[in-house]
Length: 160
Image (tube, rainbow, N blue to C red; front, side, top):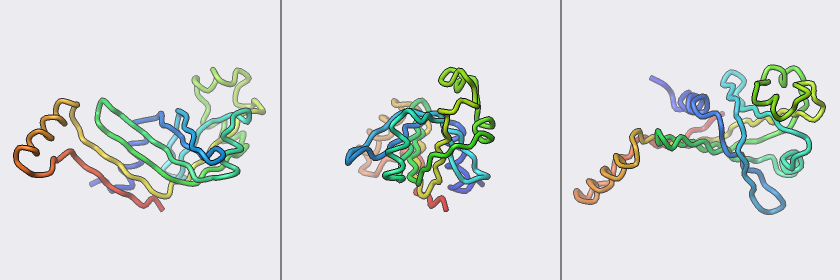
C-alpha cells in the first residue's frame, strides 16, 4: 500500500503544472509553473528567470505554497514549504526540456536561468475520483440520508 507521503509525490508526478504562490510586499502572488518533483532529493524544482519578481519575493519571504489540480480526475494537492533560488548549471541541464527552450532560446547555459527549489514541509490532498455529476449525486444522497457525503480521500501529510 502506498504511504501518504508517497501518494503526494505520485500526485505531483501526475500533475506537472501547479500554481506557485509567493509573498509580494504584504500580498500574495500566484503564477503557473512546471514542477519537477524529485522524491529522492525531497524537493520540487522549477526553472525560473532572474528577470522575474520571484527571486526578490523568495529572498524576502521564502515560505511558498504550491497548488496542483486535476479537475478531470477531482484530485487536488496543496504543499507548503521553503523555497530558494539557486544558480546551478548542472541541475539546470538535468531539468532542461523542449518547453524550457521556448523561454530561454540560448539553452541551459543562458545566464538568466535559475532553479527554484522548494523543500516541502506539509501537504494536503483530496481525491474524489469521478466527475462533477458523480460528486453532485453523492452530495444529494447524503442530504437525503442525513449522512456526510463520502467524497473520497483527504489526507494531511507531514513531508519531513
